[in-house]
Length: 107
Image 1 (cartoon, rainbow, N blue to C red):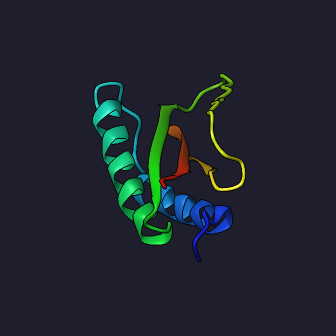
Image 2: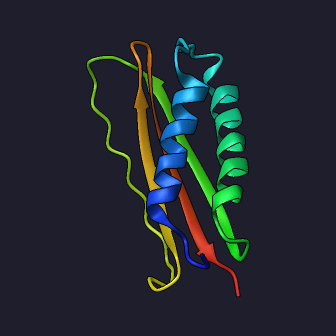
Image 3: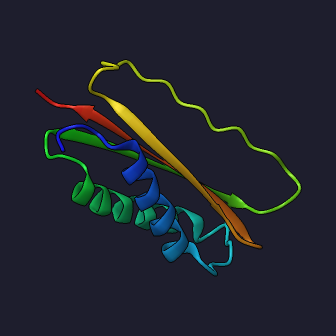
């Protein structure tokens, strides 16, 4: 109950991305506000499943679905005994999204 549960956060991410982006059509002008609203949704939902001593960093990458490939990577300096992260992807016919939530234990 006091540690960052990667599996639980990943399931939350997958469900939240599917419900927020289900049939959304990609728009270059609308992608920035959409990414911001998805980040706010993920932060809100993550706070429900992550213990309160964790600071959360949420990151969302949105892009147009096409014939391209994309690699998303991140690095962090943290304590491997207490800190962790979860990541999930979503795609439909028009767009893709990669969401990551880092949980950093705050003493």
